[in-house]
Amino acid sequence: MSQPRTPDQQFARYVKIAIGFFILCFGYFIVADLYMPMTPQARVYHQVTQITPQVNGDIVAVEVSNNEPVKAGQLLMRINPRPYELAVQQAELALAQVQLQNQQLDADISALNADLSAAKAKLNEQQRLHKRSAALLVSKAISEQQSDEITAGLATAKAQVSAIKAKIQAAKIKRGDHGDNNVALQQAKNALAQAQLNLSYTQVLAPHDGVISNLQVTTGTYAKAGMAMTGLVANSLDLAADFREKSLYHVRVGKTALVSFDALPGQVFSAHVSEFSAGSSDGQLNANGALAQVETSNRWVRDAQRQRIHLQLEPQSSAKLTYLPSGSRATVQIIPDGGIRAALAKVQIKFVSLMHYIY
Image 1 (cartoon, rainbow, N blue to C red):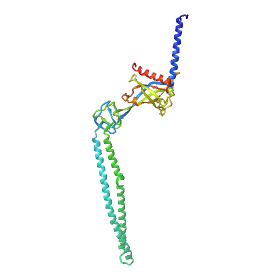
Image 2: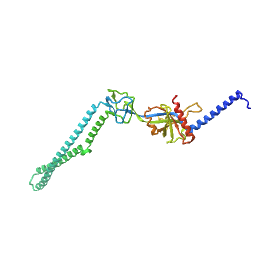
Image 3: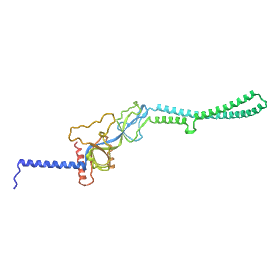
Image 4: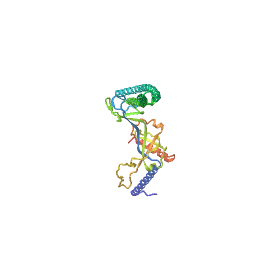
């Protein structure tokens, strides 16, 4: 018959049980952190597009309200189009003026060609007269003065032909090519296209599907090109999770994961690792001319560095989570390939999801 344990013996037994339990938990933590890592440092991100007008002007109408879902191409706001309509009319008039100028140059070139034909006929006449005068001068039929006058007339006729040819060449250069290759015509058409483009910018459209956020614009607000007026939050979400570097040793792209969102306690969603971030801001060096900043720490065990991975929710899960706001927190559990570890990992994330009912 065993003797009853003394209080000291019972206390020693409890201490041994506690130490054993601690060793068991510590070993489980080490194994779990390597082969079935979990992190509560996960967050939902949505692409946010800044809606920035591309022209200046008074906003005459705001067609949406804050937090309203919109479709790609939907009208968000209107900028006063009148100045840009006038610019289009001015560009159209400039194009018509260039076309008229080209027509006038064509007429001038035709007239100069007619003058050239007349000048060539005159030159041909002077050349024949000069040839006859040379024979008449030998026979003393004409005086030397008359011969000189004929020679001068020939030179004048030649100069006239050269002058008209130069005018035709200058007119052709000013006229340029015919059709769409004409430089002046292209410039006028480009100016008209730019004016029409600026006019289209007076209607600010949604670049993609999403939800309008932080709309602080009212009718009468002066819009400046390049200055954001509101934000458009995309429906598609990106789930980013930060793990300790050691915990990612066995994690690869495509690895299965389970996700629990703080906003949806008790629910677990399927996902997979889609990509690893190239690094973190701690590993970025700025070329600012300053000397390197040396890390200093008095701690024997430093804080573990975390690296970011991105996860893609499975289609059946993603369809249920499009309404989650940007910034929602989540817990991510990496699932090993089969075995008891996979079962334990699923138990871990399910336990965490249930704990979200409390905290």
